[in-house]
Length: 61
Image (cartoon, rainbow, N blue to C red; front, side, top):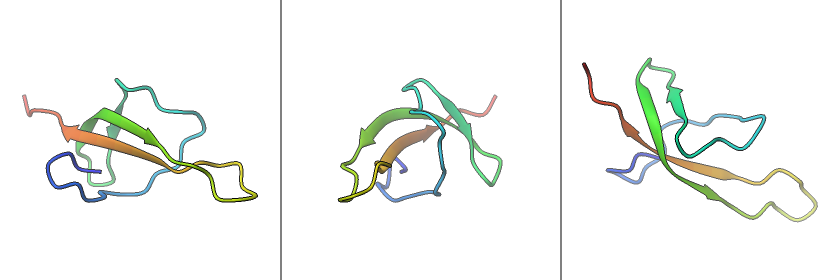
């Protein structure tokens, strides 16, 4: 999720819960850092919970 617009950027799958300070490279090559991680409730009968990672763009050097 983009912190400025509140809209999803892309879908990703994680093997483990991402850390709040984690950095990710998006499909377009943009480096982003996690600001907030929201864990949702899994659907009935499922083990995998949906996770929303709110990111902000890292400043260009």
